[in-house]
Image (cartoon, rainbow, N blue to C red):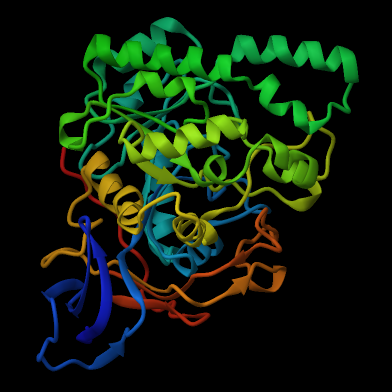
Length: 445
């Protein structure tokens, strides 16, 4: 493999920003210097005026393969990922068929090895009756177990108390949960269906999938994890109240219970339904300005540990349906890093926190081997960003298979210029190198 030298970059890493150079060799970071590196290199990139970040690790995506490839597939969405500076992802099990056996899980890994431009891992899915398969999961080679404690999109609701108790008590690896109480949601649905029929205004989505539903389910998951000392990761926290469930501990190695916030909950609020409608219909729902502000504060004080996307594409035709028929979820992975950098420009986050919450903390939370940091001996998963390049999201610059984005028309003031995956320059200035695929993530048990 070629030796690549990145010089004159503003390196954003481990709480610092400093000007320096990084040498890549054989897929790894070979040298870091606060200044020049004199080693010979096959490729030299002058990064003057650019930031160098560790590659983003997105711990929650839905790439829809197998079974739903009219919406998305591993190839197209991993292409969008690297264009957005995401070098590794963890994909969810509510595909068709649901990933509820080890055989189906390994089929997804095989497919990714053939077509994924980014590094990858896949969650093993839990159901009410597949505990034996769950317990076969290899913690060295699989990111975690996913439990839908609210059905969301798909048919994987785990709602039997004995099944939850068995999984939490016997599973020795990280459990990631989608937390919304199904009984509360169904009762709310009945109220609004009686009033509006099928044409419920989408503005009521955060009242149907309410803060109460989120808190009740999240608190149950946290209680189970404390009861059995389980490693629990609560996905897409969306309410201010849920923050009381989590501790503000800096060291993730000391935390058994962690939490994630998603880009859409940090960017949008319930006032945006009038403008964007079903395009911002997610589960859990985008909620109030107060909730959004609380999530930002939770990231700053470390009650929330990581930032992800819950990238979940649907077609425009599907999204154009009436409230109950329009699926929840939307495409975000191409724009997650630039959206966070926009929030930095707005003064809501320090720049160093972006690297921490989108790379370092994800690697620490999931115990990913040799990724998430700019360190000698680590895989060369790196992203160069021009912090002064202004551009606008339009259909012709999207890479999502679904062909739309809730960010269409949004102008960003930072741009991803180069993305390295395992030392290979897979994306540069709108061009892709598809000769080398990403690698399977490995984990320290």
